[in-house]
Image 1: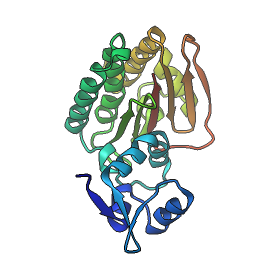
Image 2: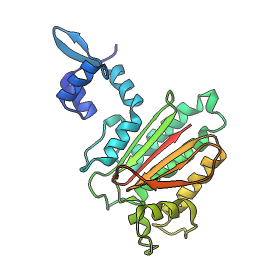
Image 3: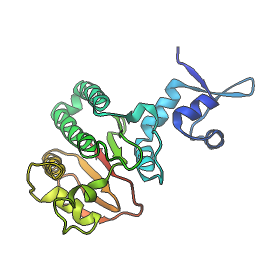
Image 4: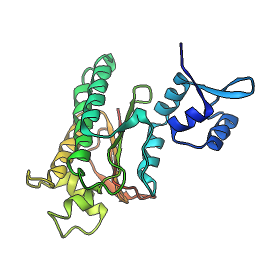
Length: 239
């Protein structure tokens, strides 16, 4: 039987206010079931909403002025939890005939981006530690976000001539640095770039106020100033 949640319980799961849930219900964004004038939400309804909105939820979390825990379904408090969820993704993707040629590479670059979060922020989180990690086979999206130091603050310690997020993002994806921490973050993202160029997927990546796109069948890197600054890094992989 599909579990039912009260509006208060659903608000806690979704990290929104009761007012927001009532407004979503009225607008048809997240429709509640009614019983004796009370609103209820099924586990399936909440789960579907979360998966269908992983881009918006992840980006909103990364862009908040102050950190707070994201919905539990997406929150990886530490690397062990991330690895467990990554293994689950690998199992699910491996059962999809349409992904049999690329699922291992999708898992590899997802792991690379996610591991960077923990490798370069342990003990130095500005506010909320951990990683937002979600994926959806229907919309063919993988989303990762953190509220860490960002690439600029990571790389400027070894390349002090960097002056902004755009320069740091370009360095991370194009320049060969040594294998020592913390600059290994940049080398890892060059590996991600190579994989994206090999298979028919797209990558959107933002750190601070700089964003980058690598499109299908086009290895050209496009970096521009983002409309909204985020805390840490955000990645969207479309496959």
